[in-house]
Amino acid sequence: MTGIFDSGVGGLSVYREIRKLLPGEDYIYFSDNAHCPYGEKPVEYVVDRAFRITEMLVSRGADIIVVACNTATAAAISSLRQAFSDPEDPAVRQRVLALSDGRRDHVKFIGMEPAVKPAVSLTRSGVVGVLATAGTLKAEKYRHTRDLAHDRITVVEHVGQGFVELVERGELSGPDAEKVVRASVQPLLDKGADTIVLGCTHYPFLADTIRKVAGPDVTIIDPAPAVARHVVEVMEEDGVLSAGQVAELSSDHKGHSVFLSSGPDDVLKRMLSML
Image 1 (cartoon, rainbow, N blue to C red):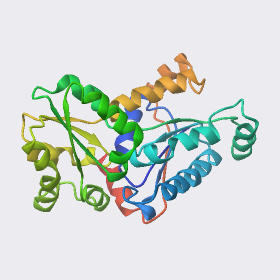
Image 2 (cartoon, rainbow, N blue to C red):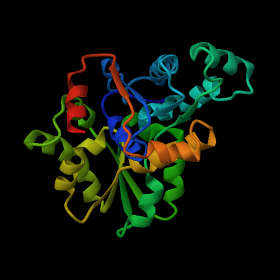
Image 3 (tube, rainbow, N blue to C red):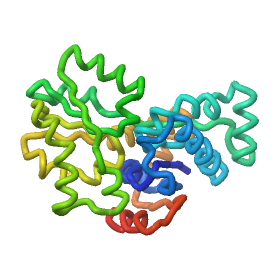
């Protein structure tokens, strides 16, 4: 079973892409919407939530976990891997065996990061815009990737102010959504960006509105498909799936998916009906 979590419904954009590749896999998705958004919260708070959710997902059968949230990835994935991923560490083995009732002795994690690298090869103007949360833009790994890209292109950034809240309300289009989106996208366009990277898993649900605001000449990059392909690779490498199982789980057989939330689930149900 594949576990996936996010601060809210945004991670469904990643779930959607993984399920396209492995429709026969079983999934458990957790929306931490009672604590959403993560972007402005202290790192320690996000790490604590990530640990609590991981323990719950493993105890409910997850063999691998996708941190389908850029902010949580930046804040917590290193700590999660240290605590849960090394089977040679006796403390890790004991912790995971206890959580999984002896099923697993370690759990691998796949995280998110803004897809700046592919944007480098796509831009024509030499200016790439990055839309992300404040937490993601401050993350060391993102800054390192951005600084490497600066040798070849110009990277301009903006927090998607109000984007997460729009998605969590299920308000993906319309005049109000366009107004909110324009306030964060226009500064990138004004600086010459012809390629915009979506650095939060909530943002792909606003992709149509972003395209409407940005215009047809601007390329929008959603990292979720590439993350989904990487999930399959890690599952094979870790022995969670064999090559034969990948073929089987890519068949017409449909696996079972469970969706949980820490708060009201009305938006989660609405987004699932759209998917």
